[in-house]
Length: 337
View 1: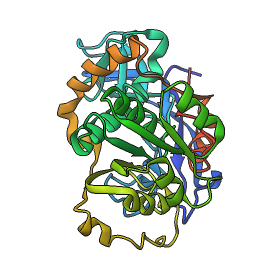
View 2: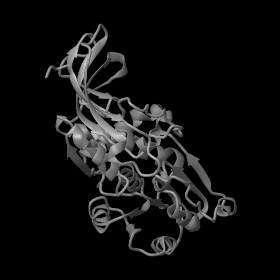
View 3: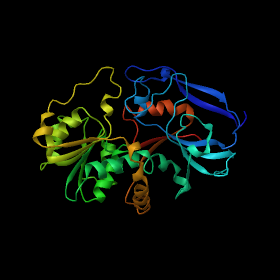
View 4: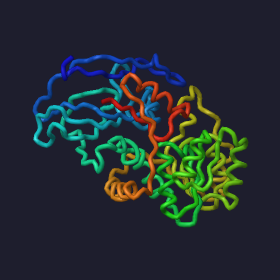
């Protein structure tokens, strides 16, 4: 097998409802050697993320749809193997959007060279130092605008985005309540991340009642990752002039038909609640400030990261599907080499 032989995961067909392995196909392709201005990259780690489910739809909501019969894509960290461009040399580490394949050829200008603070933690650039971390930082600080002493509620609180939201909110002097789907995740958030209260939404019964009990004085900020009953509970508990940063609504990602919405939306008016939906790619100007804060926070032990790492491109589909059953703990990453 030559260095130009690549393994790729293609979208074989579009799912209706929950995706399954038969909607994907692993194929072997031969790459052309890099031309002038191009490089050959070997991917080391790739990310699987819930937003990718939206790209499997023919009419993707906010990102370009994956093409049937073509390689899928997303965030990855790779190493330059061969270069025909002076800006990159073999051995350089690059951030790219060519996940779902173990190697690829691309124009050097489409890649971001990394100067990792720790080469043993390259996967962090797909999680805490990557898109999920930036999503947490922008969503909470720009749209949540937390003030010291306020109460912040975070759904999917142990996930790649949510865990960072919880910890940044604590650094800003807030009381933090998280919602998770297992006692192990709740224990990690409380004991490792310092979250004040954690609700296991699978065992708590009435989520609205559980949130009211955890936040008897109400909540001021809600970081929305789930939708459905979580949004309903947050609106019930929200204080006047509360803020909601709407990042995602994973509860409805695999619904073949629209799920029933909250029945208390009038509270938005009565409580004068502000809701901001946002897409992190619209806020690249925040990245410099984000890294300036986040890297020292990690080095000083103020931000903790949890990853679920699976090995091999042939395990990428299962890793992706596990996101929708809650089997991942923290950021889901696939180690490719």
